Length: 264
Ligand SMILES: [Zn+2]
Image (cartoon, rainbow, N blue to C red; front, side, top):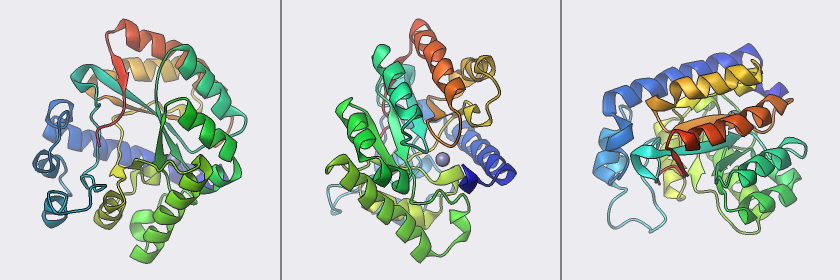
């Protein structure tokens, strides 16, 4: 996608992935966040605002979720979370949905607001198949962390509205900043709308189209380091992603993993 900004996009993703790995290493998210309370979550992020994390407890609206970035699976230490970003796309999303259905796997789709608005039929198909929705902003700006709070708010809340309208009323349960460009403000805002900030542990690098075998190898090599795996169903030719999922999903099952959703 043009909006990804070429090298800047990849660099941003790399930086974000390193950051996620660092947080995971410090806090052992595999176990520490498997059953997160607000207290666990506050320790699970080096950048969490203590006051905001504390406010996630009693007395807040029921929809509120922790402000810290989730990585763990609701299936516990042997769970993995398949996350699919940047769609929906009329060519690739149906193919991804087919692979997921063929393997009995539920995934989390991080949708761009304008894409959801343009393809409500696909958003509804995602929901009807039992997958979950995630807010990936209106226009996929990977420099959100450098922008004003008003801009961040518009990007997150307008996308929430676009996705919810396209789905027929099903709200996104997560917020994933494009390129991982979260801020304390954006995490707190998303959480107050019931959208848990969502990170990743394994970047399959499918966006760079390194070849199906390389995508498969990356997932195989890195999945032991954390359960949330990043793929894409838009932003260019995703045939390698579709082919890689056809290999990766049965392999993960053979390794004893079960498929879940990110914790909320
Ligand atoms: Zn993205």
